[in-house]
Image (cartoon, rainbow, N blue to C red; front, side):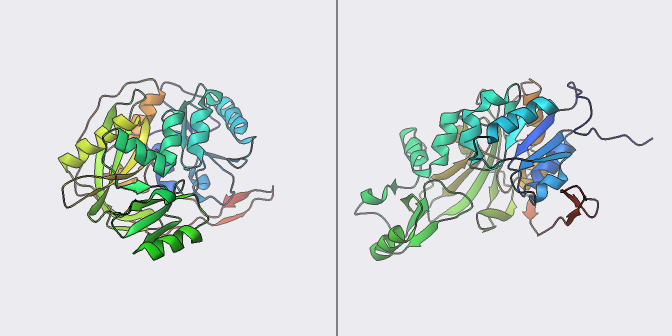
Length: 340
């Protein structure tokens, strides 16, 4: 007889099954699938009923937008109703809110660092200042009114609180810099452009802040801030750098560290995103087992670090896919065809 997969409506089996609440699940089908493959029951929520990853979850709920005062109480109700043991936020706008309000989601483990860490990393200029003060190399950066006379062009005008490479402008000289600073409507800062090769390091830390693994990958192609092509690489310097940055910053759970290798050998960090990176399929296919580590934390276990334990040379190349939906007669939508 074929085994039956646990569902969101099954009685909780705490020894084996962890119900995971994915917030702002959006398009992150890759993450939902990976957790389900690791044995989790996936409950996806989003404010958009057309968010495709909703339809790859065991259960789905439409919730208020993040800025709505009813948002966190609604999530708290779902935690109680479905015996959720792990909350995995997937949208940058979620992080400061859920890190600050994690007590409302107890007893579920919220896979985020402390609120001050999430808030600091969400502000790119504050993050830069923290990196410099903590001995982490970072490209020279300034508030718009403080740009140094000896700044090396090209300079980047970047949103302080942004994601997906939105509101980033490259200025070749002072005239272009002044133009883009006047043009953008986002609260911005100015950063020297790095000239070396860019890398991403996907890290995962336990709730004590120990880095359990760090997997570097190349950035062969990105579009709109989303990784399209990349390859895992075994680079001891990058692995050590990623683990060091994660532990200094105070990462708990996943993070994506973006850095460059400059001609002088330095590894300046431009961003630390306190979430699974857009290139998540690379560390997953390379054997990082990050979903399994997250589920172990939710069960109260304490996995040991396994830095460097992954397969090098694993390549990812992305393509478009879709979910087609039809009205179910009750005011909701259902997939027309079974999903893979």
